[in-house]
Amino acid sequence: MRLPGVPTLSATRASIKFISNSETRQLFVLRRLVGQVNRCGHQRVVNACRTNLCECCPTVYASTDQQQENRHMFDISETPLQKAETQSGRDWVKVLSKYRDPSLSRSSFELAITLGPFILLWALAWWSMSVSYWLTFTISLFNAGFLLRLFAIQHDCGHGAFFQNRTVSDWIGRVIGVLTLTPYDVWRRSHSIHHSSSGNLGRRGIGDIMTLTVTEYRDLAPINRLVYRLYRNPIVLFCLGPGYLFLAQNRLPLGLMGIGKYWVSAMCTNAAIFVWVALVLYFGGLAPILLIFLPSTLLAATAGVWLFYVQHQFETTHWEPESDWQLHEAALEGSSHYVLPPMLQWVSANIGIHHVHHLYSRIPFYRLPEVLRDHAELAESNRMTIRQSFHSVRLRLWDADARRLVSFAQARVR
Image (cartoon, rainbow, N blue to C red; front, side, top):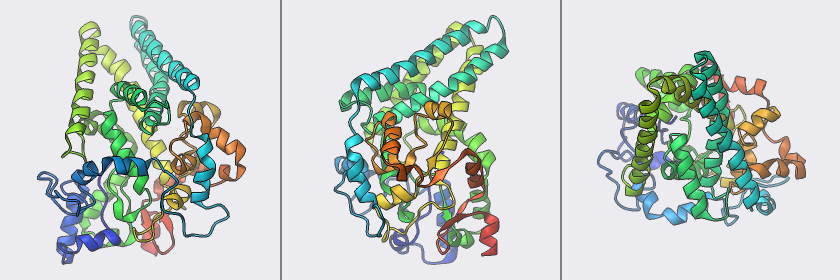
């Protein structure tokens, strides 16, 4: 789920031209919260930015598409880290480059053992409706694991990490996108922006979970604070949000509304979803939708949102103003290693090894454990257990002074 972020620090320098007082600033923040304006402050509905002078409007992303695409794949030509470390992020990128090549046979096998059981369980659940609705519901919940894994495969296709042939990867991703209710090309673009700006306080708002700093939160009007508190409430984030994201928000290319090819992606995906849902309704009525489609979709969506949350929302995560932000440092320090039991690690396609993925997103998911086996020091970096991950739900604001994600209560103390 995404609600756009609030510009700050370096980004604020661009915004300050039209935000001149506290009242206007609070109005701007509220409009950003509800998605009416871009980070630059221009109206989304009119797509006011039409030149490359603005770095946040969709037209700019379109005009520099290939250049951005290359950057988002974490090529080692990116800006090096300035922070002294035993092993810098840039050094790790060089080391990890040898793991980037996917295996055609392995990728095909992973796709087969995920898509095949997903289809078989759908068929079994359909048959079981004549036996017991509770059995149907149970099978559907179990099938959510395979749907989540399909999304992870779609994710690797988007990074060009699943097949060496980019065209094959893209079309596999588009087909899976119909099952995951996710327009592949729209998601790939917003996700690449997430990779290129994760941890950057000046580029929040696309493909991330909105996070305000303590100072920004204190400057908000009471109504805006309430909006932010509701957004960060676990019931909204993990109960209401996943359904909204996959059933509603994904139906439009939000954030990329001014670019035609993303409308094509969204509308073609919507059309394909409409066709197969119509077929289900025609042959099975409403029962398969309520007992098979919705339970598996909503559970997989909730699990996916939770995984995305804990991958970047933890106490010692990494945020920097745009002037100090470094790509590889943010990848290494701002992404967690979420340690899961073997079965959950398989279902989630190793996405818990997220710091390695952000350092080099072209590594296929099935090679991520190989990286940890070869480089034990990475296994301990930002390590988080399931029990520890529950603590992160209370953390909602970035304290720039303490360099920690803190709770609302901690922010009041400070």
